[in-house]
Amino acid sequence: MVRSFVNILIGGKAGEGVKVTGLILAKTLSRLGYSTFSYQEYPSLIRGGHNSFQIHASLDKAFSQLSKVDLLLAYDQATLKIHQKELNGDSLIIYDPDDGKPQAGFVGKYESIPMNKIALKNGNPLMANSVALGAALQLIGLSLGSLKNILKESFSNKGDEVVLANQRSSQEGFDYAKRNYAKNSFILSQPITKNKRMVITGNEALALGALAGGLKFYTSYPMTPATSILHYLASKAEKANIIVKQPEDEIGAVNQAVGASFVGVRTMTATSGGGFCLMTEGLGLSGITEIPIVIVNSMRPGPASGMPTLSGQGDLQFMIHAAQDNFPRIVLAPGDAEECFKLAKKSFYLAEKFQVPVIILMDKNISESYYSNPPFKSEHQNARLSFTKPKKGFLRYKLTENGVSPRCLVGEKYGTHLCNSYEHDQYGLATDDAEQRTRMMDKRSRKFNVIKHEMPLPKIYGNPQAKKSLISWGSNKGPILEALKNLPQINFLHLSGLWPFPAQSVKNFIENSQKVFSLECNSAGELACLIREQTGIKIEKMLKYDGRPFYPEKIVKKFNHRKRE
Image 1 (spheres, one colour):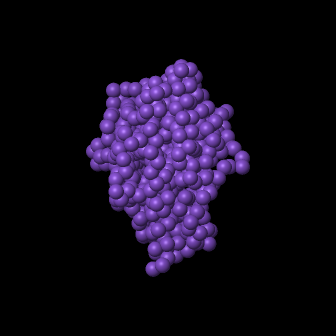
Image 2 (cartoon, rainbow, N blue to C red):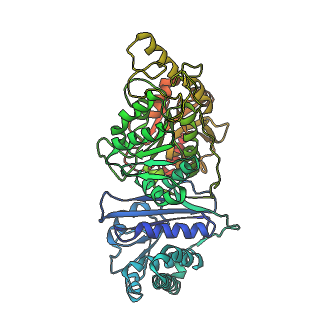
Image 3 (cartoon, rainbow, N blue to C red):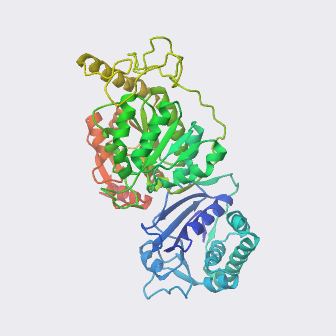
């Protein structure tokens, strides 16, 4: 049987190399010319618990994870049990009988391979991963050359002996599967062309976009699932000529960001919902001082610590209303790695031009999933915005028609002004005067009128004549686009700019459809509530809040079921 796509899942305990193995396989398939999307799940444990890494590889664009597994690499008995619902009669399962055997009633075709014995013969039990990868490629009809190259790239820092031992292990796994199980394999169609792609997470793409946007100072306290932004930027700090700091907590991080931006440096910080709670006072400080900063919130389920290593979209309304009283802010929500890069770059432009905080709203599903993407543009020019050469009588908070006041670099002649957390006059001097207060609030609010013209526009996917429609945001973009491959009667409005809200565009889209559903990973339907607040229109909700993403097959099933009704 020839297939145009394959969905592979690797499962085992934390510490067994599940993620490393999955990433090597994703890179191998991408190098061979397939579009890949990789999704991982793991518990909040250093060792133990069940980890899984899923790779969807396709001749067409692979937008998201899939629910049905074609090939399972099981490193323990738990993996065989846990993923039974994701298997069918044609699924192939690679397992080592020393780690557990299929029980009566287990679904699929089971291929026993002595992974541990082969690995030990080559010097290290962890090389069982390479044995499994070699066997996997044979079972889906692919060659071994690209895998050996990726193994060399992945382990070159450990020395030639380790590289060669892993390559031998993969070859022996390949040969064992070829001798014993060729009759059970299905063939994955091979791409005609091999477009150059990189395998990158949403967090890594965002970090690169920030560098492209002129980031010079990054400060962050580790919090899953935003932590890898800190790790990635720290690894690139010397080459990129930036400063990366880990302060004592999230309060320190946001205030460091405000302070660095005050002296003219483009700054960013990142956290998750719990850390953002601690940042809200600093967010308000940015708002009243009109000091631009970029804050990334990579969401996870709450409240409190919630489920630290899983995903959710429950912070949308929080981002729009966080901190006391009203001030302009921008909320962006990328839907894939490419948008992570582009919106991170754009966030620095928007923050500096309008002197406002910009919040980039991510979640675990987009932050830690791996996308195969063409390389991003490597050279970028970033003009500085809203700075002026101060003259005598400089008004830092001058009342202007668009609400954006002149800004100067600290220490410039005639640039003296007061900057603190109090309401102020045009010089920055604290005031309780009623008229001054009203003028300053109105000045800041006028920024909304110009910001909305530079926000990313909503984008429509699918059949433009469809009468049933989906509206969504963030990481839901991938599963919906994957589902649209089998839903020609549906279209989809993707929102990447959430605040200021594109009310008119959304209203026009809804009015051109007979039935509209909001698809979200939260329990309240926060986007649907925002749509009703901003347009007066109530729409139906499709909600999921178990910490896992939507699967495209479930979306297809829901709409096909509604069609039959």
